[in-house]
Image 1 (spheres, rainbow, N blue to C red):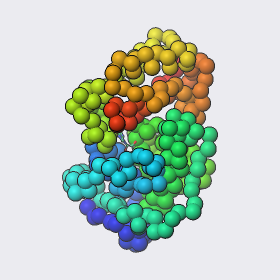
Image 2: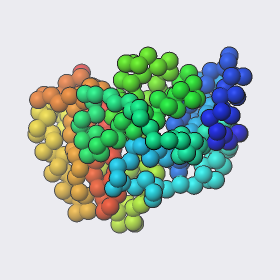
Image 3: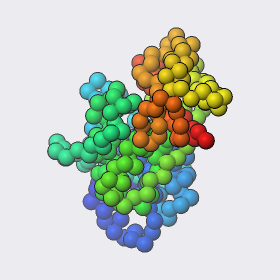
Length: 280
Ligand code: AMP
């Protein structure tokens, strides 16, 4: 496996790989099994697999955890090497942003709600860095986890609107045995908080059961989500919403493809989770 830190170096390698299909997995590192599942999927359909490890300052708000975000490049590299990944692109912030950026990619209509509402500017930062990475890596396929369902919607919209020649592959959420969605941020949780963090999954399961039993009223379901989350004394709700997916519009009565999305602070750690259901 080759580790690349310079854009110029990758461009020169990329020009030699003309006839090979390239699968790309963008990450912020501190890898876990959820990330590795994306690499596994990439390996199944691409000749060459490249992952990026880059904690993107542009997508963090001023009071967010950019400086404390967990990082362990050595361990990440070891894992990816064991998985037979071909290349890791791990640029510095200076390599990606040599001077203050003047161009932003801003996807409208699906970024004003959910994480976009609580993290102003976040999705501009995401869309901009992902487009930059696509321009640099020039992959055929790119793999994204549905753990970040709104992010998948935003990237799909950007690729569609700007005719970016990359096929987006959404991948399922990987969970711990007790249902907690895997996340790099789970390391922030104390033992007690880690136990309480299962409230997100339990709440999603509750909603799924209600919908399977025939409940369709968005307001009643959302009230129920808040009630369920009250079962954890440590849970501080950022949002608990049900929206049509992927356009993220709210409907009075749910129908079609539906996203149940939660963002909950457990102590100081903000966790997100979701489930997507198809209502027949
Ligand atoms: P991150 O490093 O958090 O930016 O995540 C990199 C990619 O891994 C994103 O596409 C995430 O959606 C995906 N990802 C993170 N956690 C999980 C998980 N538990 N299951 C599946 N994919 C995940």
